[in-house]
Length: 246
Ligand code: IPE
Ligand code: IPE
Ligand code: MG
Image 1 (cartoon, helix red, strand yellow):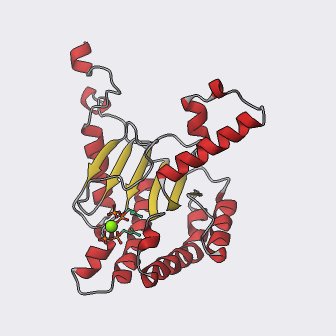
Image 2 (cartoon, rainbow, N blue to C red):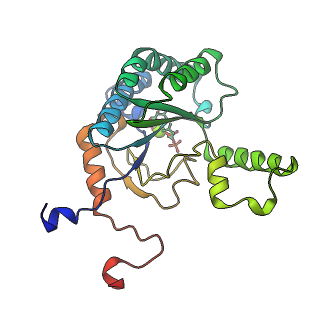
Image 3 (cartoon, rainbow, N blue to C red):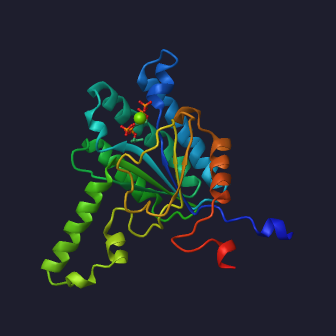
């Protein structure tokens, strides 16, 4: 390996994606929004395959936010239908490909049959190690942080820990994402540049990559290009750049 090659920065270990722009993709074609969501599922398949091909061990996808309940009932029902169909159709293949599925977010308020499918997906794939696929469903970061605080408060009340035991590490472990490393790279499609209540704690030092590509058009090449952009960034974590500290 030449000097130049060995100096390439490592790929992200964990990529998180805000899959946005399904509705605009459909509307720009005169199609119903649900058609954009249906095409968005195809892009999910490509992203999972792309992550496996690139050797990325952790992928987190924002599939439905706790704020998305404010959309029209017909759109919500189309999204729930797509999620159910996706799990029914793709679970066996994801399992064969060594994907471990993890669902984060709030389960109360979600239809019983959806919850059962989510649990089945987690149970079946729990021993897989090739790719950990975290799906954020009925997820909101502030609610997740409040749930973690409540959990730790309960442990204090039960006398299991002292208030002073609540370190950053213990707090992170109490989040829905406990045990998974923080995302190194956050991608948001469709040109929007905001976090929309996604992984507020975990993204503290993530590199942010925004692309105008609408989610249904996002393919392996777009994923590869976001990874290359990530590798061109210098992560300093509050320190000095390699150049100035030399
Ligand atoms: C993302 O696409 C999918 C979900 C939020 C469920 P949108 O439905 O938000 O698409 P736009 O932003 O309206 O184009
Ligand atoms: C964020 O997208 C949620 C998901 C991608 C699931 P939204 O389209 O709901 O976000 P806002 O409303 O534009 O902030
Ligand atoms: Mg949107």
